[in-house]
Length: 460
Image 1: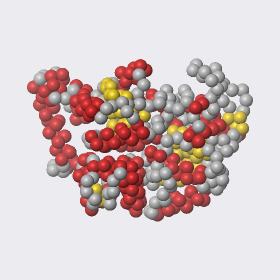
Image 2: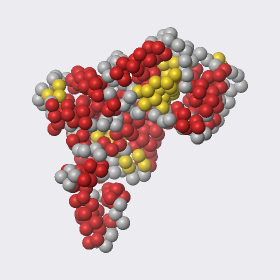
Image 3: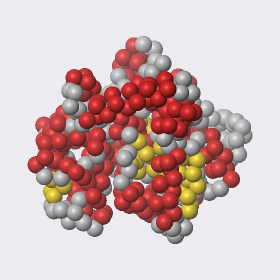
Image 4: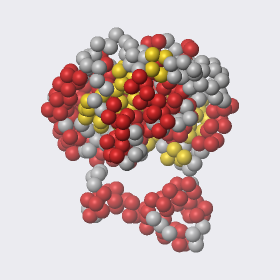
């Protein structure tokens, strides 16, 4: 996209300047800011094709930026920058509508490729309801958390059993609860159930309940009539009505408010909904599949989730096992992601070196399939040989994950660096009598970064 307008939100000013200069050399128009509130003001005054935002910012997080884009239905793509410690957040951002996430330290070629691909992709959200084609409304941007456009059954016993359960429950009309961590493909499993059911010819509508505000959740799910509340300028068709004759998938169901839970229970029991502010019931024919990474049974016992609704939904449950617990699937999916990355980047990498295979086997994969796909794509981009070597992997993958073992291993590179960094900060603060502005200047970092490090190391 020629002369695309990019908003960069990054509080490390040196880092921000490097990214800005790099993108401007490739003919992108880049505005930058270090704060979320300032970014919102800029978005009110100007339209951007793409937002690149750090996750951790002085006055909030990059997820708030993404939520603002979703809430205001802006026609803007979002790339989230994270550290590996925030990988689960990165995976959640994909479900919310982020085009992609990239991890620090950022490789320039990786950044440019990600930006170019993001600008070629249609925005995940922001299409006005009356302009969206029906097909587009049946399935949201689920490809970012899926294995591929075609469902691929894993080879592990857990995956084979899951596929057996899907085949058993799909032809029925039973409500299903899908359990599992972020990034394990719960939405993909739900769509698989839909495609193998008698409703496969109908719509599949997916909603992330975690992204719905308490005020608008009822309107999004059940619709509203004009004038029902401030801002209701027209009649709105809710997701349940859009899913009529098909399947509705409610992800992170535990986030729904008590009031919306009551409306949902009524919809299940009576097969009818009523729009917010409406006076008549609308009959619906919808199968419900829900997903959660919480213990809904425990939440119901504590009174945090309606127990009667839980039992209505939990007619059948499936568990999506995390990648670290199904080793036989790891390289099965890795080979698929390698093929996808080769095709996407125009390369012909043959496979993985033995050292990379060993690293993959011992890593815990907190971001599950999405993280595996992202790492392989990045490695393919950086690889100039026939095989991917560990030099093409993010540094964090090469470091021990167990913090206690890190502390006990004096040769651990990351621990050693952090010990030295903490000592240097304490020494500098003492020298300037705890004048943080002077300390930041001497250390050649901005004040916000210094404050973050003081908090991280527990320095008084």
